Image (cartoon, rainbow, N blue to C red; front, side):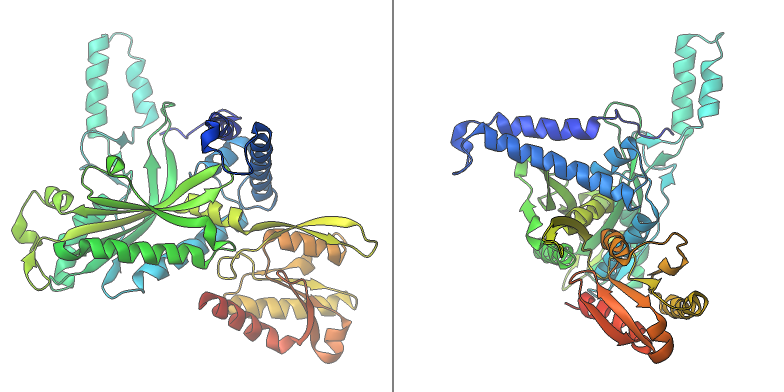
Amino acid sequence: MGRYLAEPDVALKMLTRCVRHVLSKPLSTVKTGQSSRGRYSTAAAEGLDRVRTLLQFCADRHYISPGQTNSELFQRGLRCSYGPLGTELMRNLLDQWWHSVTRSRAHVFGINTLSSSQGRGAGGLRIVESEHLQQMLEQHELSRERVIQEANVLLQRSPSVRRGLLQGALEQCVPSLELVNRKLPFGLAETGLCFQPSDGSGCPAEFTQTSLVWFCSPRTSSQWLDHWTRQRLKWWRKFALCPSDFSSSEVPEENLEEAASRGVRILYSFAWGQECLETLWSRGSEELLLTHKGVHSKLQCRDGRKSVPHVVSVSGNMDRGMMAFLSNSLQQLKKEDGKQKLQQRKVLKLHPVLAPVKVALDIGRGATMELRQVCESLLQDFLETKIFAWPGYLETMPTSMELLNAKYDEMGVLFTVVISENTLESGLVQVRSRDTTIKETMHISEIRNFLTRYISAADNI
């Protein structure tokens, strides 16, 4: 199956279309203080600059791999090639999502279903061996009708790939009922790669989906939709530097999915407009009955009375969610140096729980060999506590601490610890905070507990 390929300027073209749409609005829709097209053009140019800055920043600081196609995939909320820091951020994000849904209520269980299946119907996306297809097309003696016939047979025999995680949870409902003694409510959670159909290019693209499928009684399904909407919006805002950028909105009736009676979207306001991060649906029981061939007896549950469960689904796009948090956390701050010159500094203020690197270790003045040994010991201490530390002391090129701090701020590193000759004499180290730039002196034996408490406190807010 081919990879999705896009024109080099697609990302910029998408934003340009959005800007043109804004500019084409009649003056009656313009807010007070925004009555001139020139002001719209300025805002649009600033938005375009923010998009370029963010995408270039993510590549420069190893959150995504370089390349225009890779950046365009990332902006569209699709899975791209992530760099080392992006991979760690995604892992942290998925861990927090998993924790939030499986530990927030009783009877939420994790499942792991196949990404491809022979039993997902005739339509959709399918896996075909390119060599087999090429050999068939090169048989020139075959008539056009025979080629079409053999292609159809090949497609029918080929497994289809999933476009979402809902169906897997519906199939797991009956076995899970025995686990909960047929008592409602309960939920099934899963994360995994899914495929989005192509936009005409013939090349589908991957995205990382999260899914919670909640089985409840018919009379409580609307209340559960409201409950999970509050929970999910609260979760997104918990890790945000600017929580107001995240919002929720009811899906208009004309845009409801066929099986859904209600829908809610969790949205993020990017520079180019709002994008959906998660969608919640109240789906009724129709799809569940269809999955199990309409056999009510298999699905009978207890919740005060016997009934077939109704389904509330929560599905999220974590690739787009990751970009939302990067966009939300990137700050460009201005400061004056000692010579009263105005300087700009970029800081990636990711939430302490999500930040890929918690602490960087560097050495100051002193006996290099001894200082490195202290750093090695401290690094091992962090690894045992599962604190991701950056071994800056291994850098061979001499760099000023000012430049190192600027680099670590852009990487999102929470704290920088400098080991110096003072450490060898008294055990004291210098600790600099990413968010305040304040430098404190601390005993080396206190560092691990300090970081653990700091991250734990941020997680519990």
